[in-house]
Length: 79
Image (cartoon, rainbow, N blue to C red; front, side, top):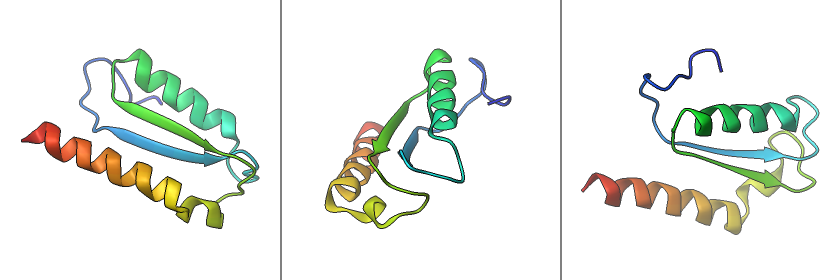
């Protein structure tokens, strides 16, 4: 978060975080998201309910669809 500022270029960020993550507290992703948004950056944060760190829920069709849409929107915005 120390490297995020209004004047620093940062690519769009897509985050997924499991609500049961025992390695990285969910609140850390919330703080990162809040910092990105307060600096006017493009960021999306999705909570993956009951998922642990790197759990199989991150590979669900719903999550993969969100990733696909995020990337597709970036590509169409660049055209």
